[in-house]
Image (cartoon, rainbow, N blue to C red; front, side):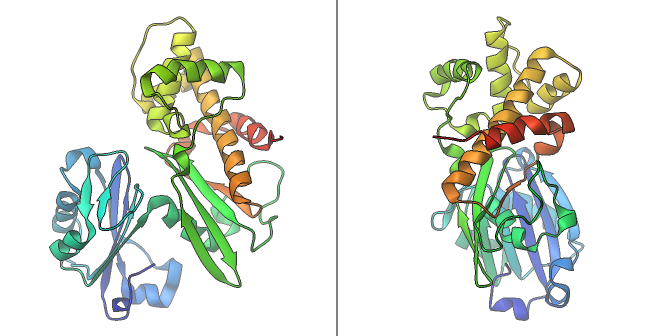
Length: 305
């Protein structure tokens, strides 16, 4: 993934995972990467909050001045939570935007590569080992055909989706904005949620439900259906209330897990992902408890005409 051809002579590469909430930065020693491959360590790893910096350039200046131990990268690879169209990049779920060419000049880089955040995860899928992943449900790990398409998806500040196609040892990653496809309710309770959200959004995509803010939307809809007044919370507060046993929060989290399974199953059908569906994203460790995995798996499998 390093920019080329300069990677052969460069000393350090800046790598970054830039989401809607957090910006994670690190440095990679290019020579160690050439020797050790994926085992090369990340140095100077640091997470910054997006809201604390006016722009990506300001965040990068802060990181390099305070956390990079005086090292100056010659190369950079940025994974961004945004669809990429040309030189101008606008983040989907925060106020940052930047010009790729201007940022390269600002940092005095030999080369700069910018890719979609879930495409970045998708590039890593063929490198995963058995101990890196956990199977959900009865299908054994590695049960799919080696060259069959695979997809990776998951909720964070937004809802990401990318596809991986392998053929004759070559890997091709397809970036998508699949999280923005329209929500299709399957039960009366889900129809009621849709009706609650339609006046607010006009069009309800899966990302309106399956991300941090989506959990808040689900919670608000469930409170309204229960005849309770609005109580606007942050996503961690909804999760905390569910852990404490609040009935409405538990219902919202269960809807979240069920809908994520349905979205994953539909995405698998759309992409012919017989090689596997991989879930990632910052929300999952907080919401997908052992007891909720069957909800996800059942809706994932519940397909037909």
